[in-house]
Length: 247
Length: 239
Image 1 (cartoon, rainbow over the protein chains, first blue to last red):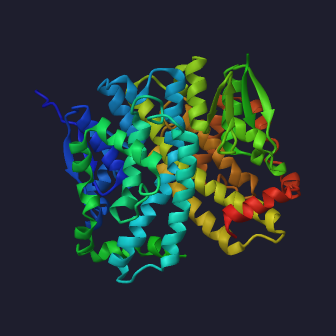
Image 2 (image 1 turned 30 degrees about the vertical axis):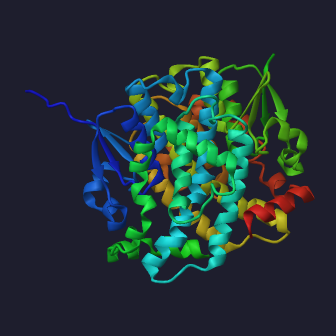
Image 3 (image 1 turned 180 degrees about the horizontal axis):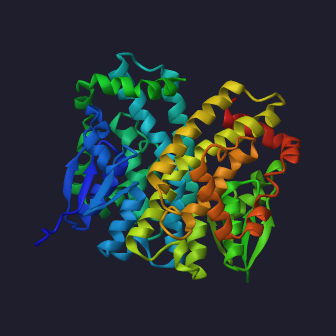
């Protein structure tokens, strides 16, 4: 029996920062994959079909034959190894690699946790509840993000061109996509931070401006999202999460 | 020059490192950073880790934060047995997957129980809030279902037949609610069986040694937090 070579499948919604990291990485490294769109705001990640792929009901998800994998960090590492991507993405040098691991770990409880809140507060809460979130809430998030940005510049970036040193790595990629979320909703976090802005330019350059723009098209045109009709079931499902955010 | 590990065994990630280094006979100098005395907030420790958190590693002039990064660094530098971080592409991906997920799942929920039941009362001098604890336990319960369904399933260990960094990182986090008086293993036979296997694989004596301090409920409940730490906690925990 002939088994057709099953393409690598990546389940993505480019509204989601980790999905953008995976998308950019795969494209930049010419990794052939089938883009399986998952529209988060149509509640598609909660469907039965998607559940078969992913019990945790989150994107991104990779499917390589019968092997399914969640978590963007795990997916990026898997792809870098399987497709032997250039060394700088995840340096084989012990200490440089440790720096990337260090950032990828810290990332979860900093940018990954905080940056998405800007989207929730500025766009999604109004979209889902028909009401604006209290302005103090946005300020709270901006302050939290600001504190993280200070740590990022002081500890991870310092005076280097990239987190690891002279070349872009998975760390920069994961960081930049997350920081584009506030930018997309009008929080100009790069405006008063020249060092950070310079780093962002370098990352865009290293990734390729066209690819970077392509990946960020949706988040940068968030107004279109604001006019999407949200699935009532999804509104119900997300109501508790939203309430928590407003506490 | 021996690797220095800056640790406090009250901290889950510190225990993972302690166990890993000892189990693999990695020579290291145990640099005790006493959390309750607020030593991690000192300027001196800030030179080791500007993020002012434990654990931290110092290898010559090279300093490293984040337990996951340190575990991986040690596994590579000291060529630890393959099962800890399998060279098999897919098995390794499974470890990475768990190590990534756990930050905002098991780790977060376990910490929350510990903060609510043990730390916050000590910081503010008031009994813990039963409502807040109930909420924290509820979230932990939900996370444990995900852990059993997605990560453990019916395998002996997270990645299959042998213990890996994933199990080690998981177990130390799950001991924090236990130490707080919430025995999450009590009604979960599958989880309890997995815990036994992990303890066995690590070595019961070493496991006990690592957890001695945090499991001493009496001393835990009567910890004298430094005033600096109390202020710091009140700020970050927002009672």
